[in-house]
Length: 249
Image (cartoon, rainbow, N blue to C red; front, side):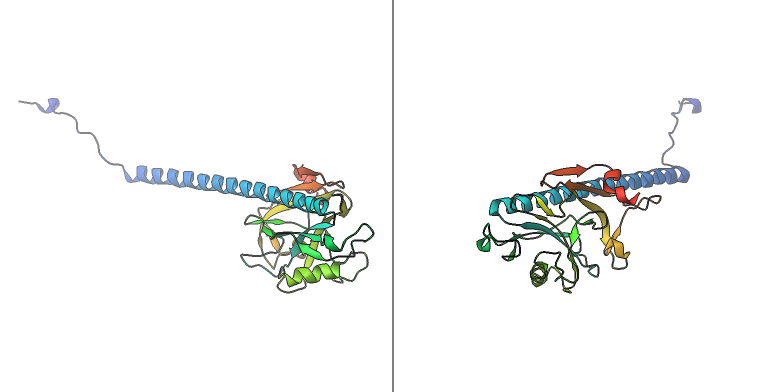
C-alpha cells in the first residue's frame, strides 16, 4: 500500500496567461529588431552597389573616349514629374560619345554626332544620383547657349531616345576628352548617390526625389555615398559626410 506522502508529485503543466504574454512580447521585440537590422543591411548593400555602378559607368565613359579618340559623356536625366515606379529621373545612367567617323585631329567637338554607347543602366531600386550634392554640369533650357558644345543636337537625341517622356527635362553630365581628361567641368567633380523615393512634390532643389532617411538635426541624407572624378580622369571614393556635404554644413 502506498501512503499519500509516497505518491509522486504531479508536475505543473502549461503556462499562465501572464507568461504567454511575456513570451509573445519578447518574440515581437526580437522580430522588430531583426527586421530593422535586415533593412539596414539591405540599404547598405544597395548603396554600395550604386556607388560601384556609378564608378564603373564613369570608367566606361573615359575608356570610350580614349579608345575611340573622341569625346564622351556620362549622362543623367532629370524629370521631376516622373514619379513612376520605373522612373528614369536621376536613376538612369547613360554613356554617350561623339561618332569618331566624322572626327579628325583638325575638327572640334562641335563636329560629329552623339551616339549612345550600349544600353543605359538603372541604379539599384531606391537610389539616385543627387544633382544637389554633386557638381555635375547641366544643359540649360536654352540649348542654343553658346557656352555649351553642341547641346541642341545632344538634347534632341536624348529626347528621341525617349529618355524623357516630356521632352523638356534637364540633362546633367560630365565629359571626357580624347585623352581621358575631364573637359566639363574641368575641376574635381563630386558625384553623390542618396537613398530616396520619387516624389514630384519634393522641393525643387531635390529634383523630384525625396531623400530618406534624413538626419533630423542636419537635414542631410544619412544613406549617401559617392566618388570624386579628378581632372585627369582618376577616381577617388567619398568616405565621410564632410567630403560629401562640405557645402551644406
